[in-house]
Length: 417
Image (cartoon, rainbow, N blue to C red):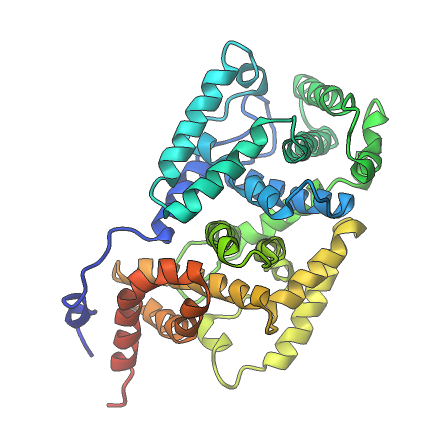
């Protein structure tokens, strides 16, 4: 057996960074931002959790309103996933009253934009301009997309506040502060004369002074449960990695955002919204269904047919916790991620495999040899896809020799004696 991979390392001039490094840095920034500071006893929420919630709330609101010619659902979903990257890089969650004070608002927005732009400057040009344009959608409520995202964001505050008030174990001062959040949301949303039709009816409980009916349509309780479960589940159960399932899902989603904005420029007919949605809800079944160890899942004797039937049952059961308007999209996402010959199914698979490969490469090059097996499987599967999808080839081909290094190490170390 070779001594780690010295034989192969000598052959390769390693590039300094991959998308794994890029996303890890975003996660470090997001996880150090604690939201709702200054409110005593409030439920902990960081920017990673908030970004996931905002993305799924965006999916829900888009499904309620239905497809519109003046709104690109994919761009809105990308915005939901990325909108707090500037805040994460800045390093502080600024309370609403300060952030929206006219003496601070413009300057703070420019600082966040500067940090966002600096962070994304290392990406290929094909991604940078598109992502910066999407990031700026949140700046203008004069556009349908900007107005729509403002509703999503404000209703997210309302959902969180309502859930906190209903805990009934907070201090009177904290309850009062959340009541004021609800009042602000109502004033911010209701006066809009051209408020979206179906979404206006969906948000009708805002008319209730105490918003008691919000519980009937709020996704906050189910999203909290999913986040709690996913944070307690190891994404790589057979390895020493501490990455949890929420991190794995959001990593693949962010990698998907970057690759899909590029791929849409080459394949405008691609339903990138459905692909990104599938990446976000891809492990919904895992609140009750196991994550199989990599080796077991890829063993020829693994019962794939039985696994798919059982996972579909658990996925469907978990979907029932979401409002009815969203369930068809969730079912479509499950069908997409379980196979099919469409371009959407293939690029979904490519992004997922590439995300696995990037993580395994990161760990392998830092001395964790067991990830060589993952690199072996991923390289075999992803090679033919890298010629089919421009975005995959753009990121994968410069790294291919590094992937092969792990694959060759695995093959050589497992040759019969």
